[in-house]
Length: 89
Image (cartoon, rainbow, N blue to C red):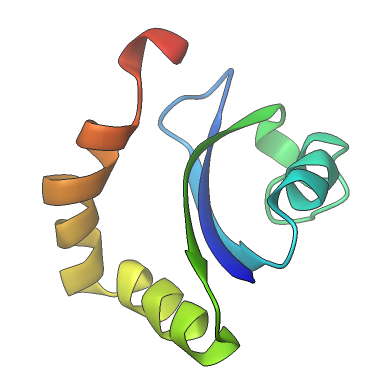
């Protein structure tokens, strides 16, 4: 399986990161160990969303979509506020 995931900084809740991985748990551990340069500054992180895909190509397409202007709007309108627990921030 291939996973598209979104993480949110625990100390800087406006900071989020979208990525793709084969193991969400291992990748989150790398983010929290500050071993991912793009996210090290805002560690620690918590997982706020993930979606599973059986094909890497589909996961890549979805990730690219979520990073596009239309995908950002879709996420804001339909995903992030519905799946993220504001009390967990």
